[in-house]
Length: 99
Image 1 (cartoon, helix red, strand yellow):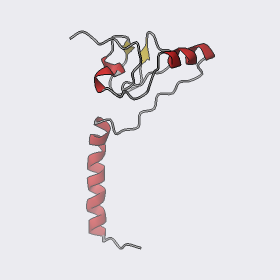
Image 2: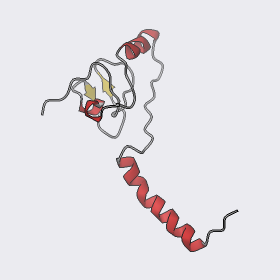
Image 3: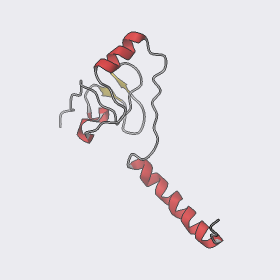
Image 4: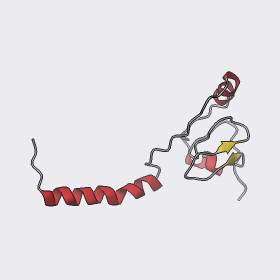
């Protein structure tokens, strides 16, 4: 068993707590968008459009798509993909918002 002084424990705890908001802002937070009770057709549509909760290309995130209704920090909806949509998700129907 490793012994840790109170002072070191306190410092380490403060560093972890201070870094938590930064981690959440950088995508380190655990946002989960529930799909609810989707019908078989809705699940099939999500699958056919290859919807993913986390985009492999950050420039193709749902939050940057014209079809997405929501913001960067909470789940939203899509006019094409049924169910709750993660802002960092993506699908084949991605349409970038005009600059």
